[in-house]
Length: 70
Image (cartoon, rainbow, N blue to C red; front, side, top):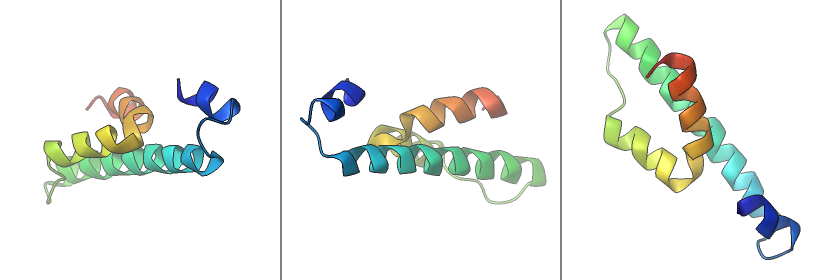
C-alpha cells in the first residue's frame, strides 16, 4: 500500500505529492470532459482519461466518475 510504504520510508515523500497531483489532474480532466459533453464541444478521449488514471490519478478518476456519473 502506498501510504504504508511512504510512512515506512520505502518510497520518497515527493511520490505522495505526485500521486495527489495526478488525482487532482484526473478530477479536472473528467470535469472538463463532462462540461464539454454538455456544451457539445471537443471532448477528452476515454483512452486519455484511463491513461491519466493508470499513471497515478486513479483516486481522482474514481471520485470524478462518481461525482459526474461518467
